[in-house]
Amino acid sequence: MSGHSKWSTIKRKKGALDAKRGKLFTRLGRELTIAAREGGANPDANTRLRLAIAKAKAANMPKENIDRAIARGVGGGDDGVVMEEITYEGYGPHGVAILIDVLTDNRNRTLSAIRTLFNRANGSLAEANAVAWQFERKGYIEISAEGVDPDQLLLDAADAGADDIVTGEETHIVYTPREALAAVESKLSEAGYKVTDSSLSWVAKNEIELGLEESMQVTSLLEKLEDLDDVQSVASNLNISDEVAAAMA
Image (cartoon, rainbow, N blue to C red; front, side, top):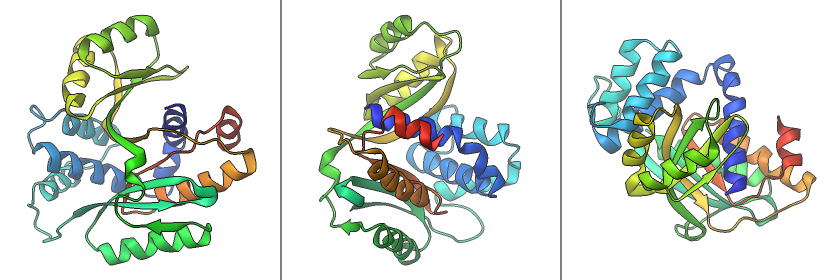
């Protein structure tokens, strides 16, 4: 899972760029919509939505924007827009498997944009389930490492029902069974850990390693896919080395 956690760290460090590109509210709105769609509009009963609202407020997202995004997730809203959640599968440069989760009101527009990026990168889209079998759907919880004893976190997370932990200098990543995400996140929060992100995520069962130049070609495609407005998340089975992570940072 090292490649997955490093990619998440790289995305977090680049997060400030989203605001400069005017994409921050769009991404936050998607998070709110998906959270409401999956768990309902009541943040007291939907931990993912509660966290998404907290992130939106921290970014000074207007309340009406937050309410509109939540309403869209539960099928409401006054704009008549119906959002569709789709997972696209493909192979990037050098045979790297890639999954792209999108939330869109126009699947033809989204598919065209994704296909164009794959073609330009010498990759290709794949049929349903041609790639997905190489991944598992897991709960992903990101915890601030400040003041945290990794050994104690390991014990607390295991007691809460977590599968695995990847420790880091700035954040620790806790993986859970998909159905246990909300319960584990709630128990860790109650135990005093600062949860900075929580979501369902695709995690590769087996990762592949490439050289620096080849890895940069793949991560270039991953970044361009992430930048599409309709894309919610991108996962791959690339094992991102420390060298690649440093080059991207």
